Image (tube, rainbow, N blue to C red; front, side, top):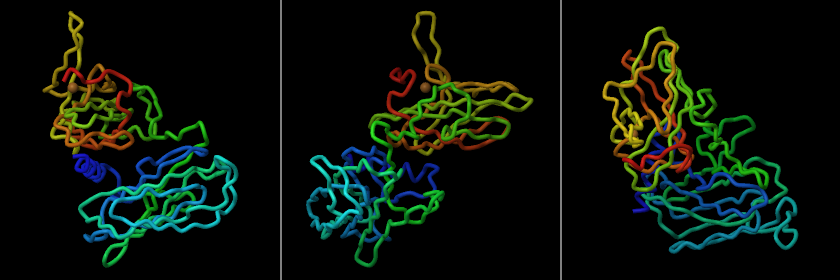
Length: 330
Ligand SMILES: [Cu+2]
């Protein structure tokens, strides 16, 4: 079950707005300097249909005191060597250690996914903002080399075969560019909140919430501002991660009970006006979820308006339990 669930996350990534998918990645892609770190490398597939029999990882400079985790069915070989300099470690300076790990003799069929784990310590002395784990996957008739590292200023998305990246923050200051907690309802467009324009409609402040495994519904929030001189109506919501999308409103009746109803006629955005979809109020509803929404990922949603304007909004997925009322009434 777990296994299928993970595959479906890859499917979700493939469906989202990310230009490339199924690269080798780290399960936890950011951490702090001066802390221990468990590198879980996720190998999404084989090489061109063939099974992977060897996985070789180059340990980046500054990831010190590294130990690979044994893996049933696979043989581990490590290459040790001197670090570029000596780093502070638990019991004093450390100047050499594991620089390469190779798991071999196993079989990871192309249709499967697997994880390769090594634990170590992120040197406090590092000044880089990211470490790159270069990974080579060897198959019967070839190999996949995930070794591209972006040049300064280059967008890592432009790389054909990117190395797995680990973003670093100074100790005590976790990197969290995906989780800046700006208030829901903040209509100001911030990078990464799905700000976009569909026809005369300016969309901002978009987000959704991570769901528990097995959850069947999720809600989406955003603010729509109509810059046009005629009213328009949001009539349709679609997303690849859910069987269907609806527009809902939540109201509190005289008895103080919250009720939700589907806005069958859509949601009107007055000329020159704004409508805010937020927890406890109007929202996009995603039903028959095909997989859990994972914090830090993105959900792409297609919105269609009565005027004929159609466009896509990308909703960053915030933490489970992120600000606002939940959907327990469903
Ligand atoms: Cu709802």
